[in-house]
Image 1 (cartoon, rainbow, N blue to C red):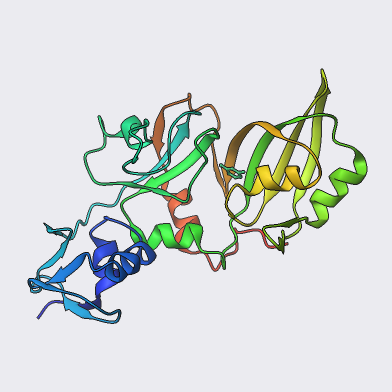
Image 2 (tube, helix red, strand yellow):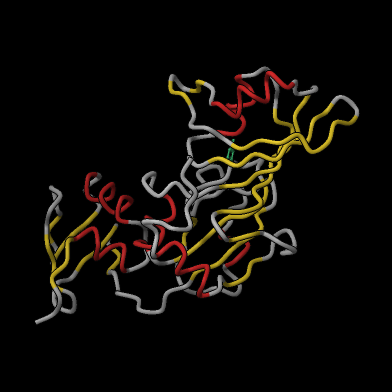
Length: 248
Ligand code: URA
């Protein structure tokens, strides 16, 4: 008898998406087990015995896990397929990576920098789960000169989408030609968070780049290129309960 697992775990193990993504597929009635559409959460399946399909595609459990860091250029969407046919981050890896990896979390179309990708749904959950609060470092170019009171507001937290952001580390790196370059480290991953935080104190973000997530750094990786994560980097998130994740 094969191992019995929850359906969403099975789908995540196939590398198609994370467990949460799989739950959504189930809600959307896109999943069949042994030819029958699944209509509720909580179904269990046996590995090597039950036949699981998503959108009619039979899933295979893929043992070889892949973990990569990509330097995403601006002008790419962080999705596997784009409804408007814009370039996606998949276009940057598919020539060399033949397993089905997917982006871990997201960067806006205009944002550059570090994006993690994997085919390990459980690991992706650990990286993005709000409970683990991985620290994310960005460089942002702001329109206008950020004042010290505004800087302090960003550090203490500002209200975006009706909820205060948690304390952030933020430093002014340079002020030039009416623009301010800042470094900001946040521990959440809300939608367009950095842009909205600076908007909340009256500054538009003109350029944004993610430099690091936890211990994984962009370093000298050229724009549009990727590298495999080291075992230390992979384990850092796997062990996350998390000594490495900074909690403020
Ligand atoms: N914050 C943003 O505003 N955009 C990103 O892409 C990432 C963080």
